[in-house]
Image 1: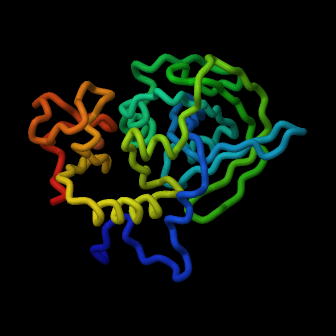
Image 2: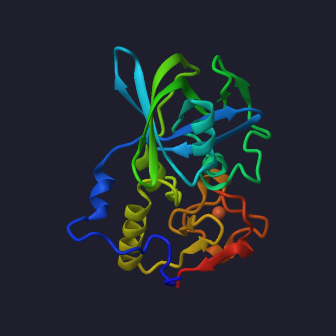
Length: 247
Ligand code: FE
């Protein structure tokens, strides 16, 4: 082991990874069902690739259980999330693993036309897709597919990756393509501010006292020490004792 922390891997000269921050994305829950096992994860890489046929693609980390299940099932559903989606909900799909958690427990969903579970909470639109091609991209596999069902579930404004980062204080999952750029960006912010932030050791969420945790009734300007004892990480649900000071 090199002792290198995740996200601090050596960068290729000439690659300013923060440049990737100017690429715009949405945020989507991608689900699938292979045999009796269903699972899902949070991705920012769902796009329409052609209009005729109506084709789409997603990129999934090979480390994700959902990746292996889509490999087996050859189908997936992608749900467009609404702007108001709480961090806790995003954390369930982005920072937990389906290997030891049933992410669907307590989450309203139904079986879709392809057999994939369609998540109904915080979902503006859902697409069900049959995989037509798989492209090995290194850490990730690109799944190209044909859309077999597309439906709008409710009106609203979609959640963007930028909003998730800048307004909601969300972090990039370690299996997301933008993870390294995210860490570089965070380090820049940390260097430019003298703020007592606390980081969740479980998921990497940073509690920023300047922002508070408005989704859970904590006003901006609340120091970490003044958070209620029963306050939990809005992303993964870990308790206050799982947080460490950033100094
Ligand atoms: Fe957490």
